Length: 130
Length: 109
Image (cartoon, rainbow over all chains, first blue to last red):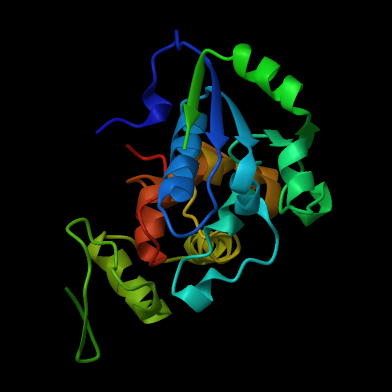
């Protein structure tokens, strides 16, 4: 078993974008994607997160999944800063369609218009969508 | 299984307890003894820090994150690998999380 701390000197840093498009609960996608993000961050990759469509609900404040007997992993987004993940984007159209503003989110986000979001995706080495 | 005051507490194959609500300071002492650690005030400070961190973020931080977070919140002198590895020689995140009754840290592959 090796730990990321033991990584050799030349490590390849890629630009990763994790795109979240699904509502937080009901499927495992949001939680699994979050775990991938934390692991990529441990390997010192250049990690970016984007929230689109119903994915914007993943970072909404005041979730109460305990009432559905689910773990409230929305709290974990608050630890992203400790993991060095601070490039977090939400799509303007998606939040407007759902009546949300950046104040509704647990973490600081950058709001991008759809065009700018596709430009961001273009600039990545790896894009993973869930 | 750990046995404590006539009660049995399930753990996984690596010794992390299965039901996080089973944790108590007595259990922490027992797990530490199994790991041949004498719990000092400094050990407790890290264990309690981890429990608070889990409470707040629902996550057991990986070692590098723990080091940084400890430095930020408990003081720079404590936020070093040296300090934390001296307390928990088998890995500050892995070993301290086990004693704190938390799951194995995310990011430990």
